[in-house]
Length: 163
Image (cartoon, rainbow, N blue to C red; front, side, top):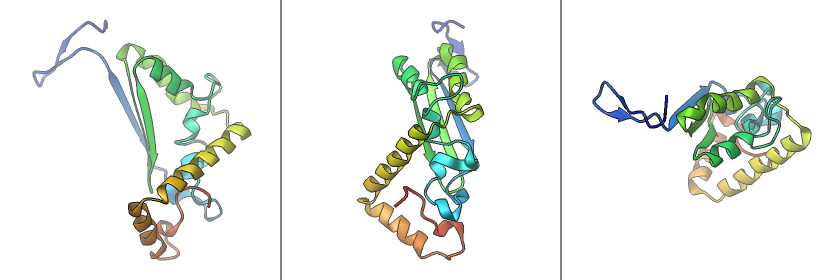
């Protein structure tokens, strides 16, 4: 399809073929952190890959931030977020680029590089995010609710950073 094409939709709107959006939710989040590694689910869920690892390269696209760099060069963007029981990934790009973008997006889940120096930088990034969150009253209340919940429940765990 040419990006110039206009496609009539059943709801009487028209779509010109761009941009295309992709979202994926994975049923893995903070609750899966083992007690000895609390706060790391955004980098290690299912001990394979996650929110932060998406940007650290794969077998086919070894350059760090390859997906984000490609999206930025072509007017697209991506975001990811880890919650208690799931992690969400979202991106958008020109529809004519979607096949290549999906390949770049999928590869870190199939064959991540997981280089130690890259992982260490991402751990520091997670800690930096937590340092910023510590200044938020909303986050403090969130942590207070967690720490006053039942000790043996996953909700009681620390969920961001390593400190």
